[in-house]
Image (cartoon, rainbow, N blue to C red; front, side, top):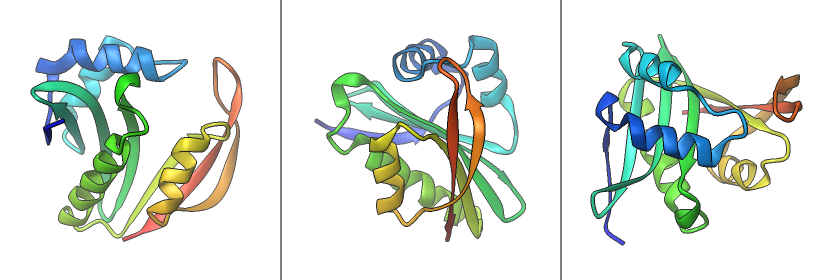
Length: 146
């Protein structure tokens, strides 16, 4: 594998939609993704393996706070460090934007993602009851001080 991370935009909409649909039970629509990619206070990074988009991550930021919006990795590349690589680069981006804290929500059943976030030092600070749909599930709210 030859991995590369770089900023992505609307030119990758088809690949992003495929990753969304393969990764989430309630994926973002094309319209939602295109809007996200066009907003000023958002940054999206793509993870490429020999030129093929295999994952992406998004960050929303305002003043000194950030929120990780989505991290998705193709099924074939999961459990190989791709998510770790994306999260690492996203946090470097957050530091470069002078953010002091980053938040995220994660499905309570997504044990792999929870383990990843906790390895990076994220701490659970709350629960959002019934936050997710399809299926309905609570979200754990996490925070990381940078």
